[in-house]
Length: 176
Length: 442
Image 1 (tube, rainbow over the protein chains, first blue to last red):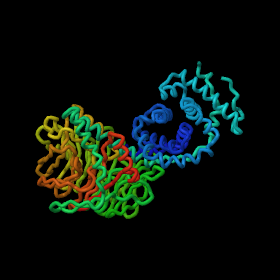
Image 2: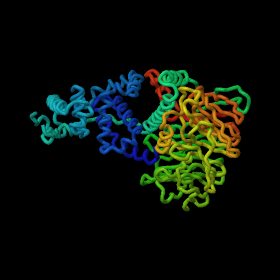
Image 3: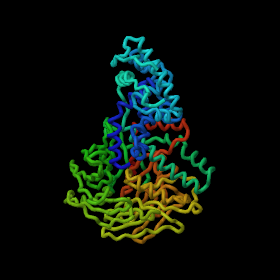
Image 4: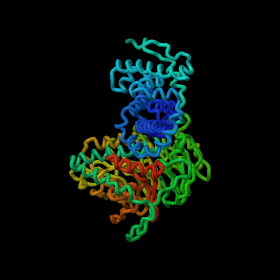
């Protein structure tokens, strides 16, 4: 990689790290796994930077990498190895934080994996339905159905809680 | 269902955007260094695959993987390892070059001066910025930044370092460092990219500028770094890798890679190839000696399954050009590589067809360094091979004139099984995830 490519990479990634980390954390609900996911992703992105930076929609490319990394963790030997070698000592610190986790994070964590993924990808990462479907290797209909179910469950869950609708005042206002 | 009727769910958007999440701990420095290792492994794996395929088919592949993935090799300790062979390599120790404490991880290739006293490489800081580091007898010092992503390319025996960075607009920025100050070198007008390749004892800088696939040798005058650099050759299809003390540049010519040398007066010549060899590249030059590799047809090779990893010395970032060249050289898929040394005075070429790695460094007396299976070696002018101590994946890239000091890095082969990957990962973690740079003292 030429020096200018490296600085392009650093510039691009630095500006987005926090957002990717947020997406990863909301997906997996675990601080350390989120760090691992993002670390794996930015490393892969560096390896493939020449190709990735030529992509029409680089943000979309990265979001696809993220969702694939999350869904297909088994395919990522790297991530797997990291988790195998590091989980025991990390588990303890992760557990202590559970009670303090944000209400939204907990509500998301209770959703089935597929519903949680579509919500984060579509509404945090702004991925179109088609891209989410491609990344999840399912149909657009499936993505839409999971979106609808996920939204309903999430709103119901938050509606029971004191923080319902926090920040918007609109919680639960849609019919499906 | 039409997308415009799709749920926008602004309430959930806001919730997702404002939910409390812990701080991110991703480390760009680690990504860049780890990613760099993956890239190197892939390169080597690709070359190895082509070589092995050409030679012997799948049985050899299995054997090669078994051999190179041997976990025991990873465990060879770095430290007071000693060989006992006749001088000049009778007692050698190997040590990791230390990173400046607490400042980041090391990256890039290490370059050194002909005495071996000075060495330079890059330091990736936790925020992803990259600074040059200069070692004096193994003691590191971070140098001032010039532009972004600084990569040292050469150092002379007075500790003058030259290198490249990215400028404000992403273009190349060549620089020289001496006496505590970094100075920009003038841009090469009319070229897309340029880089210093060497700095001589007077501080004059020889480098290369290119546009597309055409390269020209350039010279920056130490007395006038900001004056326009001198173009020493017309742009041609010759690509430089190493520069000797007298300004001789060696490299390769043409798409199919033929070893080549050209001189400060602009003249050049093709270097001899051994019988049967079709391609090659000189990577380093010192005095009358040049070192590199030659490509032999597979049936001439006697080392089926050995891994070949030729690469340009000191040109870590210039991968695209090199990949193109190597890809074309390998296009037939029937090539094995062998280390080679050229006597520029007589034109004679010597090669070692039972070895696959290139000769990566050469000194004024014609000794060469050759990495390879079983550990890195040095080969005397008479052809005597001595294995250096330390890790078998040590990859020396410099050899001092007095045969007392070599610098290099560890280049682990790709792990093929999870257990090995885990081992490798542990090792990398212990090393702080950076490139492990090595110094051999003999």
